[in-house]
Amino acid sequence: MSSKRILIIDDEENMLHMLKTILSKEGYEIITAGNGIEGLEKIETNLFDTILCDLRMPEMDGLSFLKTVKVKNIDSTIIMMSAYGTIDLAVEAMKHGAYDYISKPFKPDEIILTLKKSEERERLRKENILLKKEINKEFGLENIITKNDKMLQIFETIHKISDYDTSVLILGESGTGKELVAKAIHYNSKRSGKPFVAINCGAIPENLLESELFGYVKGAFTDANQNKKGLFEEANGGTLLLDEIGELPSNLQVKLLRALQEGEVRKVGDTKQIKLDVRIIAATSKNLGQEVRNDSFREDLFYRLNVIQIDLPPLRERREDIPLLINHFLNRYNEKHHLKAKNISSAALNILVEYDWQGNIRELENAIERAVILSEGSRIEVSALPPDIRKLKAPREQEVVNDEYSIKRIHLIMEEQLIKKALDKTKGNRTQAARLLEISHPSLLSKMKEFRLR
Ligand SMILES: Nc1ncnc2c1ncn2[C@@H]1O[C@H](COP(=O)(O)OP(=O)(O)OP(=O)(O)O)[C@@H](O)[C@H]1O
Ligand SMILES: [Mg+2]
Image (cartoon, rainbow, N blue to C red; front, side, top):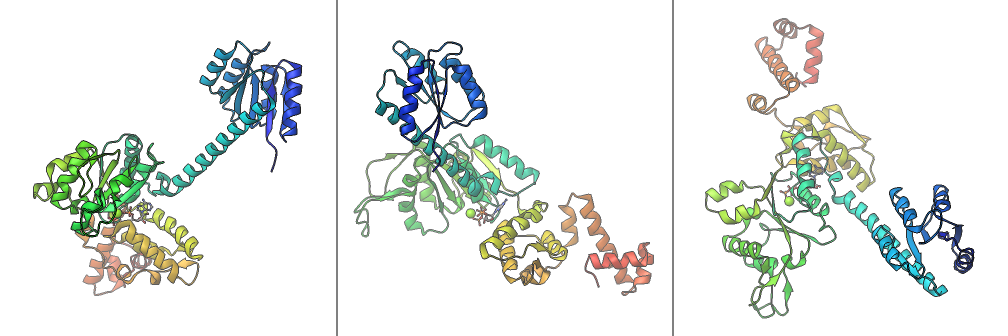
């Protein structure tokens, strides 16, 4: 282990000498300076774990030194040494970012203890930064792949709302990334150190859902032989994702609304309420507004949840993301399965970009994982794609044109249609078809190849 390096700044020779002796014995590497200016020179050329700095010195005093160092954004822990009569200065120094101070005169043990304490804090701080980075890698916005404008606007919304405790309602078809977005909100918020808990309201039998959400007390029903915490309580201080909120039975809609309004929950079989601090994110693939109009979802609960609404576009409305996502999943599944299907043939890519992805990103993810495993070589060919996708019939042309805005893509669609029409009319005679289309014979052949026409 390399030894820690300490800079000691003091105008008293004796003090410097004494500290150097004590701390060197403890295994520290010591560098000394006689005043603030000399101290600043030393930090230009060295990295220090800790700086011990006297407060009252000629030339540049401790407080000015501290302020200068902080402006320079230097990462050392700074501990001030205050002589009799400078305690107020020491307190002032801590306001300016000193970690601690020690009063002179001190015993060797005292200074060593102060240093150890600050090192422990520093270790924890660094560990914390690392952990945060890890979490961000897994759940942060960096992990949501997109270049779609609507999605990028959603990123902005996430940044804006993360730190407020408002409820969020996430709408989107199955597999569009609702849970991913919910996690990004949580891990971007000041709640990130507390739990993120998710429940799928549609996957739990109605009679169990209440005790799952709110918990129960011993004796509440036959099998309740001890108290159990509900998910609300588990999520205390953090975030609770109520997934498929549209599936919540109406009696629980009432109870949920009450819990949200009062910030309290009552366990099944209990008489008292527990106060909780939980941020609610609800998600659904249903059209919840329609459910409200049908009277199958309570309007008051809807408004309570729908403070901020995030509407995730389906994948077929952000086809520009498909190649990015393919790359992302190729990397992920190559790594996971120790395989090397590093790229994808343009024919296979074309099919994937054109497919309409009812199951959205989850379906694409599954298709890529499958293809990575089935591919023999380093390139994914059409044959490795799932049969349903591979034998995809071209979607009805008019439909495609209706929700397409890219001139380039409409151009391609029209071109394909015209070529098919011409080939139909000429019963497959390419020379005549080329003439009808007013293009050259070779260019018809190359276009037929591009559109995979025979
Ligand atoms: N933009 C994205 N970038 C990378 N991965 C994504 C993206 N969107 C979704 N995914 C991945 O797709 C899968 C489905 O996402 P998620 O579970 O968040 O969707 P969902 O909307 O909650 O789906 P469901 O309605 O089926 O519960 C997950 O594996 C997720 O990591
Ligand atoms: Mg989900």
